Length: 219
Image (cartoon, rainbow, N blue to C red):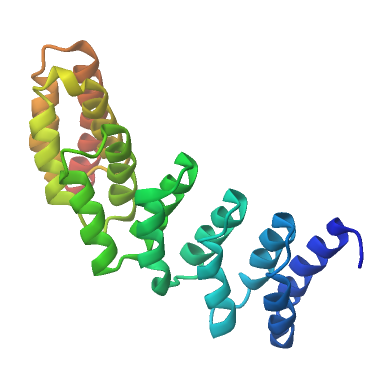
């Protein structure tokens, strides 16, 4: 019966205290009509990564009607290594109405590193119907997590380096490679530097700068 904000912070505080007997109380409050309270219930339950009931509500939260609840649930699934959430995250990545939620889902899928999730990301990367904007995010999260997709990303980079209709995607791939540089990117780097497009050459130089220290360190 308290003010909504009092109930919200109480829900989060119960989680911070990490007393497992508070889980049923939090689970019950997830039925609240106020999305703010549901969001803070997720925050509270995030402190119980190994409790089945808490994990189940977090997964339920990925399907919530309010985007903020979905966002916290997706982040919690990622942070708590809740691999059972992957099928629901794939659905969100494909169908959510909010771009932010789609991107949060892609990041979580890559971090959770399941066969199902990695296969989905690679399939999306290779699907001609998927927009390059989405593919940029997939490249970002795959290279950051470094679990899967390296070979496929290299092949795509080679393809777009000469395709001037996909310059933005070309630049994005190069910039992500520069952030997480590996010797396996050397051929792509050379192709960027040989381009006639000034921005592509500039991105290639950024990649090359990351290559040189790695070579010196190896020596």
